[in-house]
Length: 471
Image (cartoon, rainbow, N blue to C red; front, side, top):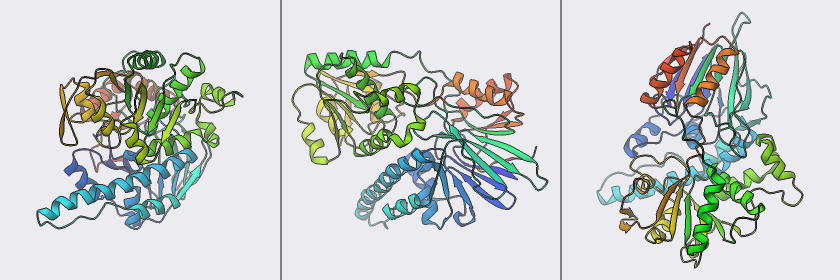
């Protein structure tokens, strides 16, 4: 009776934890490891578990570092259920099909280079059909609806506040004597008082906790007024007849930006400037956000916006254009006059954003506004770090654009938010131990020490390490 940690152990990616309970196996998340290309390629293919021995899967949310290796699980023989919230299931349709497309495209590029070197070809990690079969195995559950994924185990989902459909999992494990051990799996914990989503919830009665610690060693900067920043930059762009380019992650960040622009439009202060959302995945994901079937995920402000008779769609307004077709995206590169362009990827490593940057960062009347974390060595990080020149599609491009960053847009709780969440869970239960996952060693170590200063026992599992679930 234990849980093994096979992903997001002393790293922030590839979430995967396996519960062994009374002869059955329950997998929590099955994410893609994302890092240096060679390491990621090897880690994702050297799958550490026997898919056919797993009895059920619990998915905390749809982000690829939590869901992206599910098609590998299915490809290698898993035929059991995948339990998630309704909204997570709908977002997973978009994200997993897109991930399969990327797998196929990337391996095609790799094999082209290997062929020139007379090297053998690789197969994609998984393909479109594997993603479709994965989606067929989803079982959707509501928040706070009790269900039994395997015998003697009962689960309830609670709001995590991280992205649409994200869940904290409350897992009750009944032993042979009828005694119940409560394990809480946080998934990714969101921030309080953010737009669109409800605040993260805690769970009472926990004995053991698996908790994320992404920002365990730092707090977010004091939040600026994001609407005010967007308004100032929109006015500047309108007056200079330039471009405001916003690299944004397709799920979550794009919708937050559009939501804030909609509020400015409703207030009558947004200049008459066209706004383009140029990302097929973002378009698909926004459709899920706009689906009123997922109103249970929204906070009171979002609900008030939805029920307004004059505007029941907070993610749509006059002069907002969602672009899916490639030819329309290409036309946008030669668009004359002022415009706001929101496009993916968020770190500028792939996708349509590269074309927009290549065509516009050389102009002084362009502003690039970053809305999320930019990892080292990415194009986004180089722009933020003030490089005079950057390489895009193999060409050196002069950077004359104004580079800005929106400080208040992270989807993860910071150190104080994580501490508040952990203390609340501990105060409501009899927590024996917290396993800190989804964090680098440095940030995890600092947060572990902070927890212990508050009389909460914690540890940082290594990959393959286990935690006993015996009270």
